[in-house]
Structure formats: C-alpha cells, structure tokens
Image (tube, rainbow, N blue to C red):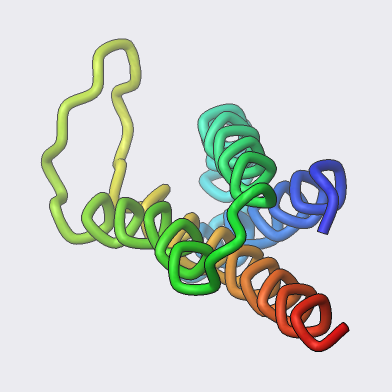
Length: 128
C-alpha cells in the first residue's frame, strides 16, 4: 500500500469516525457534532500523517514478524490514549480518549490492511 493510499484512507476513515462517534456521544446534537468536526480533524490528520510515514518506513522491513509489530505500535498507543482519560497535552484542551478511540478503530483498520498486504507480498516474493 503506497503512502498516499494509507494517508487518504486513514484521513477519510477518521472524518467518518469523528462524525459517528460525536453523533453517538452527543446524542444527535448537531451543534456539538459540528464542533467536533472543527476541533478534532487537525490532530487526527497529524496522527494519520505520522502513521503513514511509519508504514512507509516499514515497507523496507523484510521480516513478517517485525512488519506486524510495526503495524501494532500505533494501535497500542491509541489503545493507551483511549484508556487513560486525563492525559494533559499542552495547547490542546480536549478529550484525548475521544481521539484515542477514533484512532484505535481507523488507524487499526488501515494498519491491519497494510500488514496483510505486506505479508502477502513477502510470501509471494519468497515463493519465486
């Protein structure tokens, strides 16, 4: 999976995740959902760029086990971010567990697809 595809997929899934999670949490309050769509996309976009760069670096790895470990690192970080509610981040006064749960699902799906495709590519190249 190329860098631009991982970035585009993760950003689109993140926007969809922000909308769905905000709609569920705010029980359909349109103003709060729109506020979430104004506040959360920038940090989520930064997370998506960092994840895509990590996966781009991971394309050079030849060991299947290390590929899967690399794909799980952001998922574990988002899991920790979603579990621990009171993590203070300077200049960002918002709920990081909200971003953690969205990132866990969206980045997790992108990394799962990436790891499966990379494993498939490795197995096919070892056969030839």
